[in-house]
Image (cartoon, rainbow, N blue to C red; front, side):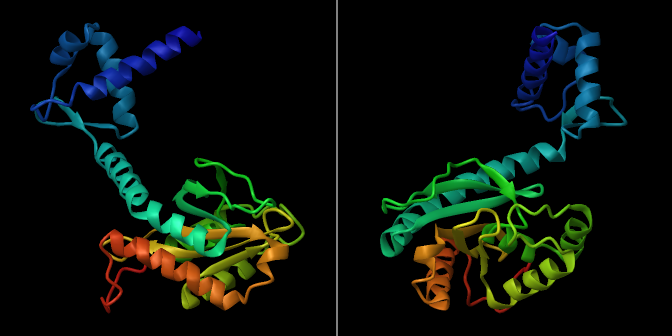
Length: 262
């Protein structure tokens, strides 16, 4: 029953919002009163949220509080808002400088999600939209995000994910992708040419936060026909410079000799 499902989701959302008070912990009876729901309904909701880590229960008092995952979700929202503010002007300048489409992407599970995208002014352009999800392994942004993951996370990804061939140029051998990610980490930028879509090329560089951790990838996309007309390393340096400009706005200082690399 769709209506019943929607009601349950709405009540779960209302229950979580009930914790937006001065009280750190709330009991079933108090939540039942505030939400106007029966205690048994509130208990069922709490049981599900507890299983998902969205709430925690104090073993001594039996009362509930928001779980650590809610904090992590809040941090993700804050990061995305910070990224938007830090990247907008830089993306505009990079598009103006190169005339090509530019994007800002973050990792979401085994995909890259583009938070920002500015299209090229050329008549021949690449169309896309913010929020679109694409696999990590076949995009320059995804390769950057994979390359700077921790060793265990990266190894787990390579062992878990099927590298499906989206074109005949897609890297489908885990060992070859591992070697390329090592190269990306060493030189500080990634490329993908004809790997996700024939005729499309891209370059990407890492965006770092205050701690030096890589939190996003800034990329430039163009048709292969235009991409090959510019020296690769010069274009890569332009993208690196733009990514570093965003990183500085997030508080990162490249002068720090010891920075987090995952």
